[in-house]
Length: 296
Image (cartoon, rainbow, N blue to C red):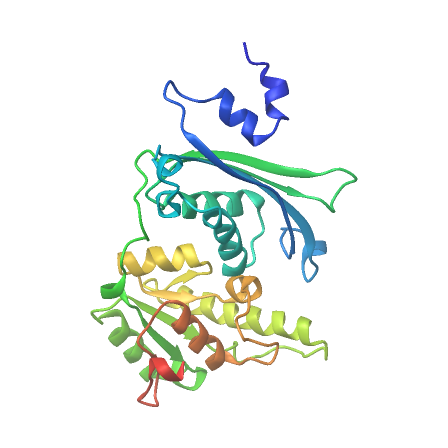
């Protein structure tokens, strides 16, 4: 009988062997893959990098590579390391659980992948290590990339304060709400503004919060407008035709290599989210301007 306590602290390879089915699968693994990244939910983990270590075991369908010595028949170790690198580069995350889930999901998109064990540990938070481990199975998991959202490209509209404050603002919202495409409204900071501190990182947060204050004020006036703050919420809104008002703090502060700076204004943010969502362009209410994808 397997000692569950010992197994819980054993290697992912040992857990994979101990939980193997009647017909064992082949396994490939990456051990002690260590890198430094900014991750964590606490304020003390913001703007600093810490070491995290990955151990991954991937069970794969049987193949004839050993007989033919044909590299094309095997699933490359790069499948694991590239999944880790891609998810670390996608956005800043608060939770190891989220990172592990996304890495497992990306790996299982490969047609040869059957089951994956992912262990991630933080090495700098305590004298030892702390972390999470998950196991995910191919069962019911679609192969290949996610759904094609080509026909669900959103309409992204920047609604300046000078338009929002006028009756024309309501006309713009009506027009956006009636548009055939799902729409995302982007706003400027609330007109009362904020008192600058002279510290760029602090002023950036205050500017983002002032935009979100404006978003919630609009949502309070018009129940069709739903405030959304995460990529998951935006993707759901696009697929379900919801009229959304973007609250940018989370996505902007968590973004990796966004090109945004502490001085980026509301139009810079709107261009960035339009690009992130694959929109055809950015419409600026009142200007009649449409920014082409190349200009984003």
